[in-house]
Amino acid sequence: MGDYHTQPLAQPSVCMSRAPAPAEPAAPSPDAPDAERPSKTRLKQASHALQDLGEAAVALPDARLDALPIDESLRDALLTYKKTRSHEGRRRQMQYIGKLMRRHDVEPLRQSVADLQLGRAQDALALHEAERWRAELLGDDAAATRFIAAHPQTDAQQLRSLVRAARKDAALAPEQRSGRAYRELFQFIRQHPLE
Image (tube, rainbow, N blue to C red; front, side, top):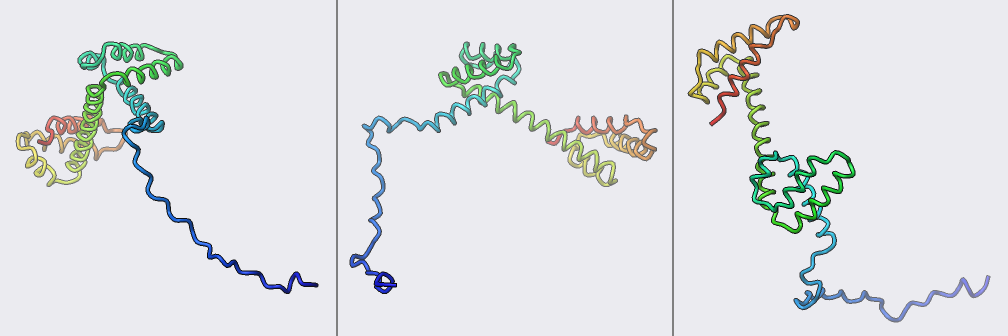
């Protein structure tokens, strides 16, 4: 075979060590041109956020848009979007709205959209609460007492009458049910929101 396989490998005489860790990058000086300029990613995120706000803003009723203290050109662009029917036209108009929103103060618009969304959430919560009370009233006799305690202004006699009628209707065969008492009980509960 030869000398090739019999010779031991030479060990390096110098210890291989890792290069020293670089010091923390120096903070950019305030004189640097990139010091206050946001990154391209941040600009895109802000642009998309404004476009999302614009999409939510076009859902606002016209009367609410007219009452907002926003720039007239932005208001006109929002109203024009509502009138535009073609997909491509709407897309371009939404980009234009985003452009206008980058130039003007949009805080009143943002607040109005938030108020509208909060109002919808509160309405949904009230419906769920009314449905829960209706199910409780139909399933438990003590629920009427709890409802009256939670809503002291409630006409107890009318409530018990509506509960009896709804239970009587629920006991009938499905094809014989009218559902009227069930709906009337729900409307009665909706008239008495939680304080």
